[in-house]
Length: 262
Image 1 (cartoon, one colour):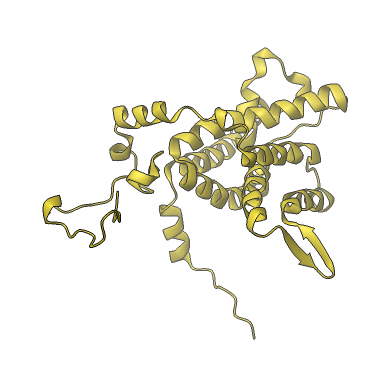
Image 2 (tube, one colour):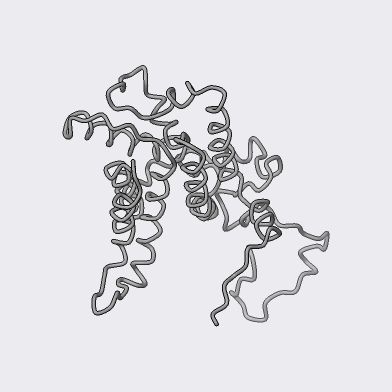
């Protein structure tokens, strides 16, 4: 009999407590806004992306719609899907980069493209909301890395390109789940593919500015589970604990030129 991993509340608690800072902020924002819509339904109306209402006075919708959800099940399923992807992204790029992208371009660009397609191409007004647009964005970016080492996977006699996996999931989701926006998910996946190519890395603030902000505000010391932009120097969660042993007393490499640390 095959053995399946059992659900462990202790492991779940440990995982949640280890989530990096930006991921926590976004998860709390999604939960908080859903809770706020219970006594105040107008919050959902304020944040949902409705193409017909979009003008210069409604630009906040492009930032808020990934955080808004239709109901509890919509919210919880999206949270379960997006949290590990956000955690992986933040661990790779850092907290400041993640905050800059997910409160800005990663919402406004796919949302803006979707709005233009709906208003001027499809002549429709399909309302969208939910973090699933981030799910497919991050999946597309991740699968492009996998594609480099594993270009294909086999399904029976067929070899399917690995990079098409998010597109297959989008089509299947649209077919099986009601009230799902195929165009919205494709806009998110499209931006993920472009991000993976490196052509839009200019969306990230310059590294010198990010380092200056980290140092000036002492973010490594003040924010718990903060991921530094310079992970090569600081590691995942900042400076690692060290002893008071002088560097002159530390053992050195027997081979000249071999580096043993930062």
